[in-house]
Image 1 (cartoon, rainbow, N blue to C red):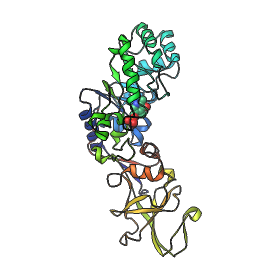
Image 2: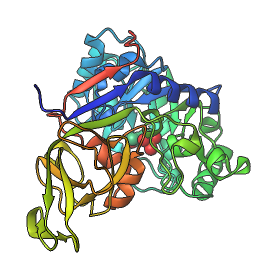
Image 3: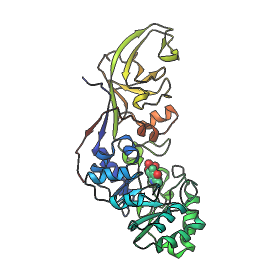
Image 4: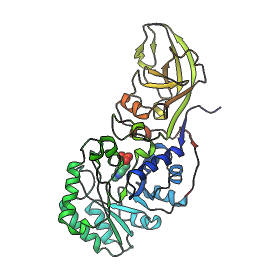
Length: 371
Ligand SMILES: *Cc1c(COP(=O)(O)O)cnc(C)c1O
């Protein structure tokens, strides 16, 4: 029998979450963000299952993988070109680059190769990570317009604080100012919305909806986790796509006062019945999840005990007398939101999902779909 730890990926839930994006932005084209192996869910299967209008990812290798699978829809490279030689790869994959820096503009201008047909011109609206400063945007646009062969330019920006109420106010002001005084920029199609921006109206009230543009770029919400700390995925009508499930591989009684796990960081005052679960930090479960982090065993919520080790973790079975070796365990999933595990471990669901190790086999459920 294989090790019982499995990441079950529900493609029906994935499609439900895409429909949520469509409902929230009915006129926008949806670029499903499938970077980081589709946030740990498996890029190939997720891309094929999603009837989005295109995909967003990071590398030409990922773009090639999708093309080899027969994907014909647009693919956006979120960090654009890394060197002039990437122009060849862009041609081969027909991927669209983000152009966020002078160096990348120069690569387009200097190349003998025909440029990509559509490029995304990224402007920094306050995050100060990637993008042209607003004052340089009009000049960058002019230069892009002079590159023969580029037929469409999309004005792009990324919100730094869309997960907070009114967190986008300053960014929106900067983009509006830009579009107000620069006629050329004002008429470009746009791409602003990530998951938090798409969900802001629902999370914080209708009046708090923020501009998402003509091309939206949802990531985390497609996978059924909430981008907003303290606002549950269920309240946003998102369905968890991954169920990380395993089994108890050992059950034992431990005397009062005995330490449990590395460092004996947990000791019970009373005799305690514990279970050992086949799942550890080398599988991607957060090592910093403390005693008390919820775990579901045999359909009941209990708590983690002591330190998470590389391949195993320990749970309290005091109140689950019937749980024996082989009892089913859900580390997170439809019955136990990953957001709760993230909160307990002092991180965000993004980090947990993208950190699920390749050694954890993925099982697909729901219809598999095709391109
Ligand atoms: C990762 C990423 C997204 C998706 O963000 P979510 O919060 O997961 O929706 C969108 N746009 C850019 C530029 C990104 O890097």
